[in-house]
Image (cartoon, rainbow, N blue to C red; front, top):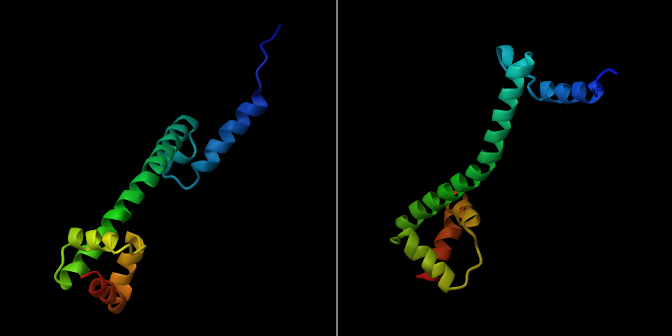
Length: 114
């Protein structure tokens, strides 16, 4: 009796991976084994870097808040400690945005916590 293989599902699986590899350079886009490895690696990077992106943005916000706070004679840690002590419910993302785009509002916050 012949071996039963589900070639319809196998072909669909390969087509899905080849579609994901569309736009890659050279054999990565049209050779199955190379494309499969390239897509696997790309998915790994995408998963990892979704986490890294959050860390990078937090670092950026802290840097911006620190720079703005130092213009008003405070360090980042002093500023954030006083923000928490005064129960100001603004996160780092909002504080960094204020520091960059609305320095008057940031200065008002600094004056309130001093």
